[in-house]
Amino acid sequence: MINHPVRVYRSEENLAREDQLAHKIASVAVDPVEVTAEVTDMIINRIIDNASVAIASLNRGPIIAARTQALAHAPSTGGTGANVFGITEKVSPEWAAWANGVAVRELDYHDTFLAAEYSHPGDNIPPILAVAQHTGASGKDLIRGIATGYEIQVDLVKAICLHKHKIDHVAHLGPSASAGIGTLLGLDLETIFQAVGQGLHTTTATRQSRKGEISTWKAHAPAFAGKMAVEAADRAMRGQTSPVPIYEGEDGVIAWMLDGKDAAYEVPLPEDGEAKRAILDTYTKEHSAEYQAQAWIDLARKLHGEHPEATDPKNVASVLIKTSHHTHYVIGSGANDPQKYDPTASRETLDHSIPYIFTVALQDGAWHHVDSYAPERAGRADTVELWHKVTTEEDAEWTRRYHSLDIAEKAFGGSVEITLNDGTVITDEIAVADAHPLGARPFAREQYINKFRSLAAGLVDEQEIDRFIAAAENLENLGAGELEQLNIVAATGVIDQSNAPKGLF
Image (tube, rainbow, N blue to C red; front, side, top):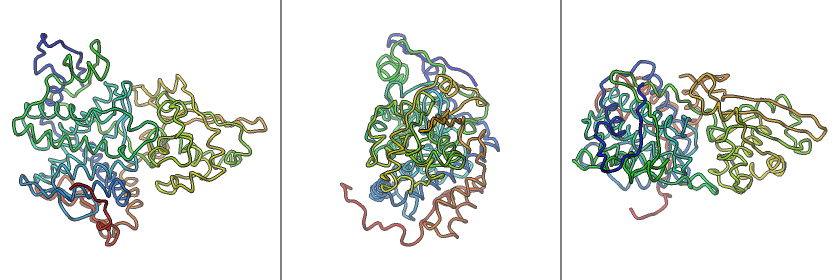
């Protein structure tokens, strides 16, 4: 890896193309280096993972709306169209990226990477896959495109913090998906450079989508970035250009949205001929909740069995969670969002409330992507009473470990102190989730398939489940035009399109 210095330049300094970050990203995208077997294996895992959570979301409001919008846009003339999860109809690729992107993100249940910024790198897959299906690409083409998408997003996330400036993390997704599409299609360096610039320029937005009363837009935000990446690639292929330099310009993203004119970053990118391995640094979710909640669900399940007395609010004086800066200030009591303690709050809000999540997992000894968020579960009197005794605080050591670049010590958990009314103090801690590569039960192919089977049960026929798994595992051998096999079709009667909401299209 090479660390590339990135700063703001005045217009008269005339920063050369090849020295611009967008150009360096494009250079990585055009590198013909082979994808390793280990990376290919993980890409297959994540295609299965994305399909799992998309299928589980098929009849949720945001997905129904996005799918209906997509169905109003027939395949465009440049290809054969792309698939939408759950149905057989094909649509234009940017709209397939939109509908599938919403389905993948809705439950907050797929992969993650956390460093200077936050991300769900699996959000790269819907737009890259949509373009691959539309253009008749092969399985190997898709693998190469996804490897690039993951690489660029993870490298940007390692180096450039967005949330500090209240910019949503999908600002790293627009460029990464644009680069991935460029690799997939074998576009030239200049075209990818322009697509990356447009992908960034059109996807910067504030983090209000993840603050206070969290709305359905939380699922739409990465889908919008993916849709913009498809459109950016299309425009660039037609010779249209982007703002230059998009990152380093004196009126660019860094100068006015991030660290300002005195900013200095070092962005790691693979050198020429170096394999794109960033996907191996990412990790998926066993539970449907914000990633920082994963370890806490596992710890709460453990405490449920070891200390059943702590599940009854009549026995508990207080619950103090000591954790990282992010967990405390974004999904903890440090956010100062009263909605995080409101039993009538939206699902999107509750899955960003560690006091709620820890309480329910502690009481139930389990976590379910639907039942744990049900209004009747959130409103249960003993849950509300215990929930309001849970607070968080930042711990410097857990913050340091959260930001560590050493995978062996990087942590997303913390410690908990449960003080009982009789003075007893129950303490425990957890560093990473059980499903993390360094956790108690790391996810491998078996776990990805089990997650898919579990979430697809009752929604997809068993024969179709088996067919999809076989197709995904055979990805390397899928020929040109065969990527529609990566779609998954719901069982008869599961999707009722006649009840879809009406709009403009």
